[in-house]
Length: 205
Length: 105
Image (cartoon, rainbow over all chains, first blue to last red; front, side, top):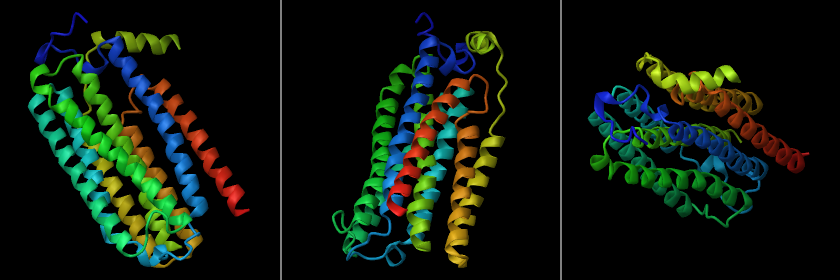
């Protein structure tokens, strides 16, 4: 912890990996992501198994609004890129740019979340409610769980950004930023499978 | 394993040369193209089986690129993260295979 005071150009290259604690945090986070894969895997398994059980609800072919899905995909993908830019700026020790890119990431994430809420409201108006059918329950559980991850990520990012002005970039704060970057990319990777399996496969039938 | 430990602990003293954002931009472009291709394939009206296999393959390719480039799995010192992910992926895939097997066959 003797490096706790280092800031700016005094910082070692890749400050997130400069301490054992930082490296352990990153490794532990990867194991957590492995566990998250199992969680999402079981939700995908449920969804794939139940996706034809639509009961009296609307069929996915009529229900799904692909334009909305395309816009949401673009927004989340771009937010993943802006968090890459933030970490790149962090590696250049350009703290102001890092902060700016993370704010852009936050705003794009928030846009995604608002679009998802609008989408869900639209689907509920079409009679696609949580308890309508096995398909609708599996749909809202899987897509909603992903949305909950986005929501949690936004809250997490705020708790990182608000005290950051006081703390600055150090070997203690750098791993926190890096780990958030990993989480945000993971949320985007899961969305790739959500739009493919839930939305596109729903259209195919 | 010993090699791996040395690189990780010795990392602080080494001068790290950064690749720059080029690969990250390329991954973004590729992700956009693969996504577009998937959306086009669905509206093109191929047979359902072909479309599903095609778009799921595209999803795996895109996910792999994002993991390897954006999440730095290609960089050194990532042996253990890869093991963690492969284990998680194996269990997840087994879950999906079993669920599909029990329900559809």
